[in-house]
Image 1 (cartoon, rainbow, N blue to C red):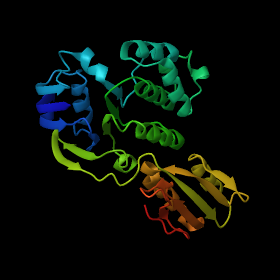
Image 2 (tube, rainbow, N blue to C red; image 1 turned 30 degrees about the vertical axis):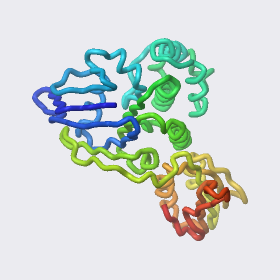
Image 3 (cartoon, rainbow, N blue to C red; image 1 turned 120 degrees about the vertical axis):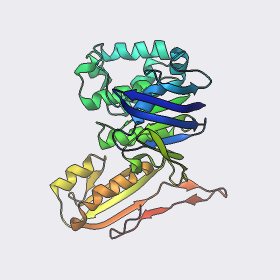
Length: 305
């Protein structure tokens, strides 16, 4: 589907991509990782036809620099840095729907799922929004249009935990798409991808298939009990959408499968006040028709990611 052959890109005598060669198939969902300056964003920009480069790139047989309209018709993109667009949000959605395919209603529905009040932000210029609002709009536009490939450059940047949870669910609904997700947080997207590609100094230094051990669409129910109510813990866990009970001593909620490791990292910061902690995987139906329940973390704080 996507072929990069000996792609080299130089900025001001600095070789950012250095003979990068990579083949991406239709079923690949790639975690693109690497340190800052490794070439991840430059590679993506070359795929989108934004940069002149040496070497060759084809997307479904088309060359991005020569047929940008055809290539971009297949790709939905969420950039790392929001563009400085001055048009109102509703006009942006209408423009994207007309030029890229899709419906404004679908984009608005996704924005609402991400926690955005479309009625409030719709008339506002895009560049006047907060960082989180901009990111939600960009995600809504990308996922609300028709595409064959999703390319997301640090898609969780500026998103609160509740919005990240929704984003993972939205991506889990699109596992039939090819994906390239550039992220510094491999643990966040590990349940969505089936391949990890690491760049270093513009070259591929790791290209490995990974087991899809976590159901990307799963929701794991969690119950946390404290010795005593704690305001700091209440603020932290409320951001995950958890509800309090028993005077703020017991908290219940759901955590997306792909986000469970980051959630457990938050929980461990409050280990000194935990009384019990239980995380149970979502119910699954096995081939015999039985209702199966898997335990992901046990009582008394014996967590197992």
